[in-house]
Image (cartoon, rainbow, N blue to C red; front, side, top):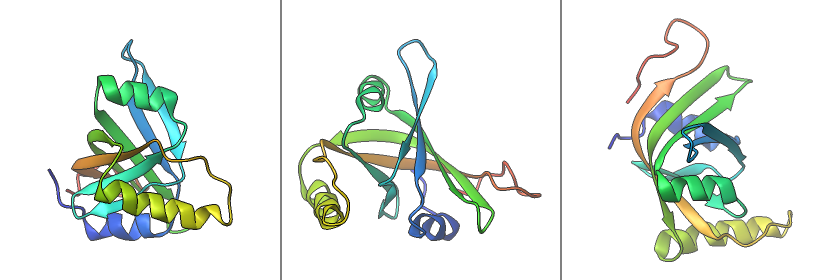
Length: 137
């Protein structure tokens, strides 16, 4: 488990979509864009699973995941690698569900099926420049 560096905290605070990559049953990568990616705590990210059939099936079979976050204005991009856990109840689930309900007053969202909790194992710089590809955590 890796502690989330400040650069990633700052990037996620911008409210950017995240790209989530999972492994399909045939080994083929699958990528999906999630609008709910955020920090859960110092060592975990999350996204809300509202209608992610393929992503969910892949994670149930193989919990390995890679998450990409990009801020084009600041020219920052990072990749998080880790393992995912599907959570359907409890304090973290309720906290994220409340955030989504508050957002639903502006945007119609389907109910959350699972909170996908990602244990961060490593963080990588994906931005342009001399540090591209370096491990940050």
